[in-house]
Amino acid sequence: MRSVLVTGGSGKAGRAVVRELLAHGYAVLNADLRPAPLPPGAGPDTAMPAHAMQVDLTEFGAAVECLQRMAGTLDRRRDPLGKPFAVVHLAGIPAPGLATDAATFQTNMMTTYNLFSAATLAGVERVVWASSETTYGLPLTRSPPLFAPVTEEHPLVPESGYALAKTLCERMAEEMHRWNPGTRFTALRISNILEAEDYALIPGFQRDPALRRWNLWSWVDARDVAQACRLALEADTAGCDAFTIAAADTVMERPSRELMAECFPDVPIRGPLAEHGTLLGIEKARRLLGYAPLHSWRQR
Image 1: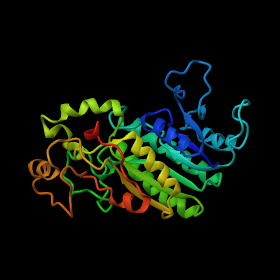
Image 2 (image 1 turned 30 degrees about the vertical axis):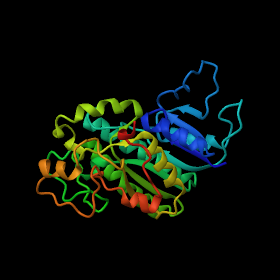
Image 3 (image 1 turned 90 degrees about the vertical axis):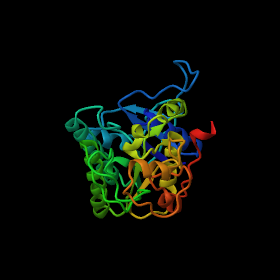
Image 4 (image 1 turned 135 degrees about the vertical axis):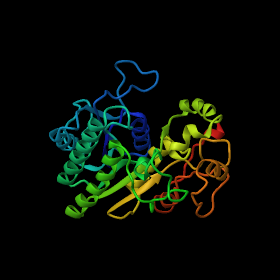
């Protein structure tokens, strides 16, 4: 059994990642500021399916201790996890606008630096972490994309402290891998995450395409984010790489080409595009990770 440290495992994406890894035979430690959520219908004495620690990962020592203690006894009632094979780093402020730009930048930079550093010190083989669709210039208030669907070849043009931190953390991963070739780093540029209960919001987007033009009407189900994280742990990828992770479709009933013609008439469409196909290209993730989105709001 391989053990994985998941940071932010109590959040929207993190809960799905923990479930996905447990279902595929991994041992998991969830490190988060918030307590791990109880399973549905569980009582206060219910044993949690994953180990959990409440930690502030803006402190370097906390990140180091999480990885060190995985090989020891985290919970006297359960077996130790063993030396960590990988880190899935999702902790941090999850979107712009939830805190000041300065606080968001500082929190996300420091948690990522601390986890990357602690992982290399511990000899962790894989680090998979949450970058963001915002690195491509979203919310597209300053300028439109250069082409669509937007792929990993698009320049990174951060427009907020949140996006700037994600962009700089991608550069950080490159340097950390150069210093520590034994640790591979995979950035997932994740789109706007929805859970199944959030699908009820989607009909409200239909009346005005401008409501969601800010991210090219893209989204991703939390369960597909979890799939992508697991696949990134298992794939034979480069030592440092980045992948866009989105659903296969948009949140709109109108065709994707029609939306682009109305809202971004001067942006060229490159290559084939399905009728409701995503405008954040996921072909690289399909090809190199084996990523295949399984969930769509159209199939409720």
